[in-house]
Image (tube, rainbow, N blue to C red):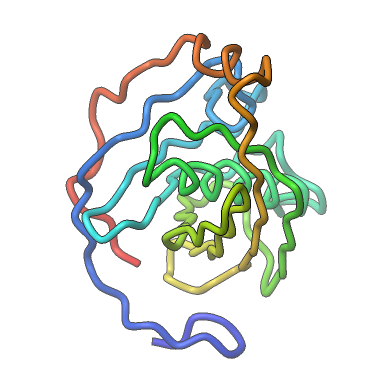
Length: 176
């Protein structure tokens, strides 16, 4: 199936093996009407992280179109979770994220943001991903660079202590 301008990929079902808890103080996780993105993320049996959300009216740039900065937020939220797959205690911060926009994202659509398995090089973690529209077209792709925080950094404890809300239901499989 043709995904983007140059991307080819066979769409198939991926079994969900874990639902990632969400935090109400996180802009990416918060699911209020306008407060946050409302991303819910899942880990697949083959090592991908998939985020599901619905594009909100409050997140438009051009009329009826999701703002590019919100699309970058979708990626940062989901690709970050991929940094923790090998070690759930890993706390990393974004160094750089590059987003390539391929087509507009309409408000109201159910979106799938897919993070490929991370590449770890010491404290540096690299993750690639893509955003799929309801019809299966790729609307954007991203590459992110994260760096793990040193154990003594105060943000480690702050992140670990934030209240997490477990998922209560979610998909058994996700197609991408």
